[in-house]
Amino acid sequence: VAVCLPEHEWWEPLKREYYTFKELYTEKYGEPESYEFFTSPYFEGDGKTMNLPPFYVDEIIRTAIKEDINYIDVATDLLIDENQYTKGVMLAKADGVLCGIDVALRVFELLGPGLFEFKKFKNDGDKISKGEIIAEIKGPTTLMLKGERTSLNMVQHMSGIATETAHCVSLIEGTKATVADTRKTLPGIRSLQ
Image (cartoon, rainbow, N blue to C red):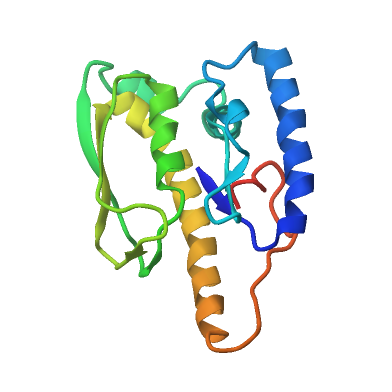
């Protein structure tokens, strides 16, 4: 997952937040499976892109899933055979800029590790048109129903931000103005926003 930051001096608070989170995560869940993000540079490429470690994103997703389905999904658990499999598609509801597709698909991976198959037709940053298929998902129906709302909420929210940001950037094209972010974010998901 990548988050784009406009200016170098804004990185330091995010680095501190990241390392604090790493310590809290390790204390709560133990050592992460991979240290890839701990040994590689925190910021890379164009100097404005921050790679978020998977465990950081996973914690946000787990919190969202717990909030959405809490204990059980009564209708799904009682009415649908747990052995039933389904194929679904993510369809663009409007024109815009896609953001958060990997986060959205990760929801299903966390609900059923190894049980889902994905085909992505679009990637973060791609322009999308209303009615266009973004991704295809195959997996257990019960888990798909339990994760679809969280998954869609994340990709819709992040794509909405990306779409509005792209619009603002187009408005100032050819000027010396720049678009900067603010701290007007939702608690718990600032890093994704």
